[in-house]
Image (cartoon, rainbow, N blue to C red):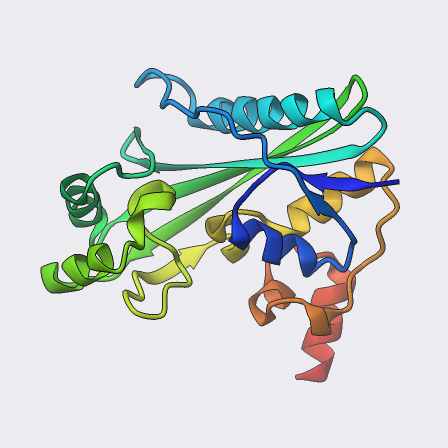
Length: 218
């Protein structure tokens, strides 16, 4: 029984690995144009994740295929991956000091069956400077990330606070993925907390047995 990650993202690979499940990588490699302005962002993320999983499942019959899609939403506007330095600069200035939503959908496919779920995290950006933005662009950070930033970026440190799942903003909610695998009948046990990012142990999506063990240790 093979689990396939339909993503080339190193961040998603690292997050899935934290669950302790063996998997292989087979990216879907599809175009991801932003849909029309008034499309529902949750539906967009779910549809794209489902499409990625379906594309890879078609060439891997019998395997379990996991895919994800992340969208960043600011005041109803979807922010994709910036395609130029100018677009990245404008995007990061737009988000600076403001709240926005990050929605990541996860889809699982096997044969003709599909399972899809999503979660939303609210993110408040810090008041970084124009010089911080310029330096981030010079390092090439924004161009492969929806919204033009990574919450875990140690140089820009773009985020002041968040409400919800941290890993959802990185690109794959560990606990949402774990729950979806369980619901689909994929053999997965509760991961050892020692293999998880510390922030996952207090995640609002974590099962009670994990958060209670963490609280008892404290």
